[in-house]
Length: 72
Image (cartoon, rainbow, N blue to C red):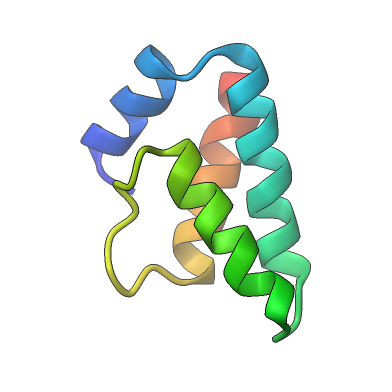
């Protein structure tokens, strides 16, 4: 996760949005392949205003979760 993403989370998202994002990224991490997984990725991308990079994977999701854990 780059500095731009960290700044966006810290400076733009309100507390409730950060909580929602943390919930979504937790669900993505633990979800096996399913139709819901696509919806969860879309929800995360919407919360982050479309700045999730192409090819983001579970390592990226873990980075966001770890960052949010410290942020909240």
